[in-house]
Amino acid sequence: MSAAEILSPSPEDGYSAAKAAAFEERLVDVLNGGAICLMTSVGHRTGLFDAMADGVAGTSADIAARAGLNERYVREWLGAMVASGIVDCDGATNTYHLPAEHAACLIRAAGPNNLAVFAQYIPELGSVEDDIVDCFKNGGGVPYARFNRFHEVMAEDSGQSVLPALREHILPLVPDLIERLETGIRVLDLGCGRGRALTQMAEWFPNSTFAGYDLSAEAIAWATANAEERGLTNLTFQVRDLGTFDRDADESAFDFVTTFDAVHDQGNPRAMVRGIRRTLDTGGVYLAQDINDSSHVHENCDHPIGPLLYTISCMHCMTVSLAQEGGEGLGAMWGRQLAVEIFSEAGFGSVEVNELEHDIQNCYYVCRP
Image 1 (tube, rainbow, N blue to C red):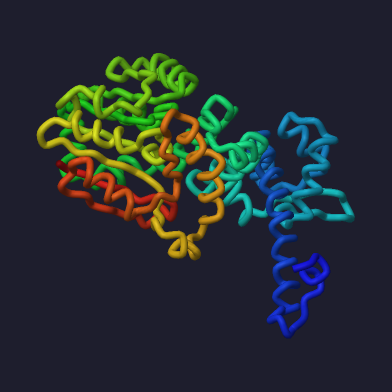
Image 2: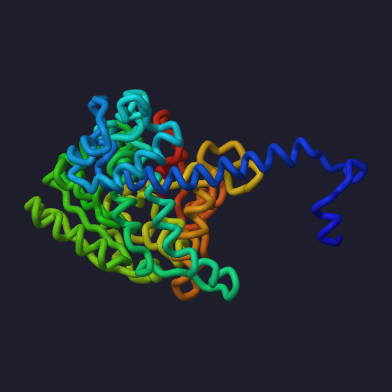
């Protein structure tokens, strides 16, 4: 088909001008949405949303002073916020106001509802676009070291999604677990990143011992320094490549093993899960948090954040796996069906899949030998 035929199709070919116009409008919305994500990330990182959280209107100079920032940049940022409908502007007084209804999704005090945290993924992923394009052409993957802030953003994400629900909703998925943690058991978290969940548990349950393993030396260094600063003597971290964990894991070394959003980006996730089965003591339990989706693409069309998750998968989770020797590249959207299959093949006789009412992003697998 020639370029002229593509650009000038006829209704006889089944072409719908209305459908084309609607799609064009949608793409314009996509472009604006991408721009808004960048500016939302800037607003979060600079504290501008927090500076406007009280709802008091102010000029660009007022708001810049509140946030301790450069007025000219703040003024241009406010222009983007007004054009996007996030911030209101009074043209008569040149003052700006963040409505309380918008602040409820944008400020740090909003806790788990702060969606500005997630906006940070867009510029972070964009920073490796050239590397990803090269992978499309030549295969391979982009290693962890190429990402400047991913562990930082993931830690913030976890801090408002996993941590607030950990004691009240997540740990109780395993009956009697909290009582055992209070008495004293051995706990391991794999792919721990900066170890925020593990650190929180170590503080809550001083009679138990906790260990965290992760491939990223930067993340482990941060986690270790944080644990030392908090004076936690029952918590240790190690840099470990989990691709051979099925052979490296100490038998019956732990009573409780966790992974928080960590299986799918491993180079050899099946080996890690087999190692988890091996390292669990008699009566031990493995709890895995991972993305709540289907292994079948067509069943994810209605997922509320499906496009975001597939993008994060392509530009981080899948590619960091493929960057490792023999990496499988499962990707974040590997899905419940494949997860249950892999857990079962590793030797877990019981795999329960749990969803939490407040969490649209994750499901929680409780696996027992």
